[in-house]
Length: 400
Image (cartoon, rainbow, N blue to C red):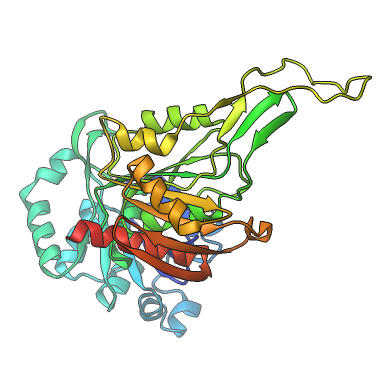
């Protein structure tokens, strides 16, 4: 799924505090992940970020005033909560948490929350002494007993120059908490390493040897793993695809670079090697463009074998718990895939027939899921669906 929060509506409440500036990045992340974002900006929040900046990022009107005739003619505070899938308060100041716990409703934000029938997440932000105060802790216990979900806070340096617990969680962590809310994320806490795309092995400064690959299948797998909760490192050869949301992408060109980056990214719990790595590379790279000879003879290019990335990971001292390879074959698909499992020492193989060159770059794929004991034909399917089926298998592996 390219945008996991697509068709999800988030109502963001921004209260007073220096951490309000982080709410702007949070809006950007939510929008990047497909969410529709509306914002309520309290009077305190407006001391730190402007309605214009919030509105520009949301591409929506920003709501500030309980007594706006236009909004309240339409029952604005009721409508705002009813039309959201989730309400997130970030930052949630000590004062606002007190107001929320007491049920006070003297501004648009508190009135909307009191009338809300949707789940509420809140990210506290305050000085560490305010956080430690028993009044704050009592309010937190009360709010959580009512079913509100707390995100953070973190420990660190504060704007006041002091150090302690009370910093608002990063926008990235708040984003992850919202994904946790919307989706079952059974792979949370696991690190997945995914390779995707081709490698390009240079002959000279303008030419290379490579395999045909769009990277679509590997990118779809990376996105599906992230949606299931895994921390994903995507090691990608040269492709034209954007990085999936919330995935760490590392770009490489050659097989040697891909191997080095894989090893530097260990330890990992899961490795899915979907990249179309070139089997050979020129032994010598010309430092200038090779010109055509006057006698029309072709230059001799001596090749060397590239490193076997999948086998190296499978035999490494930090071998991932679960290793998955791909077998792109033009003949004897099943037999070659079963032989590859033994040769590479991997756990699973996804095998696909590429004898028809029309398969390259398409949004669909036809694979067989193969282990030492299983051969399942997954039929022609969108690559995103194949990614979801693979991740379902991975979840089942960890549920055993």
